[in-house]
Length: 203
Image (cartoon, rainbow, N blue to C red; front, side, top):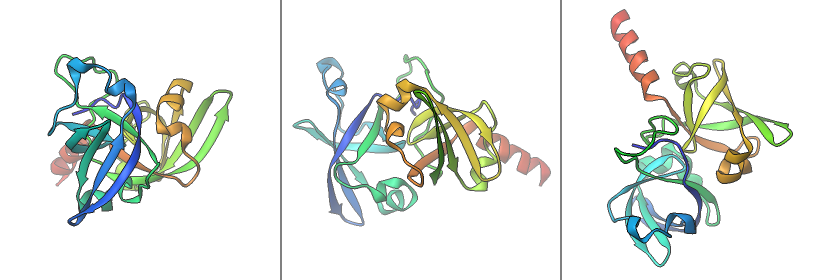
């Protein structure tokens, strides 16, 4: 479980074939490796652009993960290139503050940047997404885009929009996004439960 509060941006430094998937190697930012009392451990879950992956190796300033064919097909990880920047977040501890919202790290689908409207240092960004996802969204509700917890400003059948503050643009990959770029989308789990409950009631 995560919160959608990105701890830092890492860099993809390796994409090596591994069975039906790949071994993804990332150079994390120094801010995520500096605390010797809170080092990552093999087997822990880390969100990479919102995808919950298991850490399989951590040495010489590199973190490695194994991503299977299903993950590569259903997320943007299958489109990664060496040199790409990725959002990183370690899993939530029971004692942590919940600064964003509950994010599972299970990507629902890939969307695309539809429009970018700049207003001084702020940005209003609109995304295209499947109807089955937008029906789980509500204005002022939450959504995770590439693992970043965001507040929805508007939603219609095929698109949703968010307002990005300068800090978010600076410390996450969203500040580098361009129109038609692919992004990972995870809707709020509360919306999924409500949709399921209503479907069962009506059925």
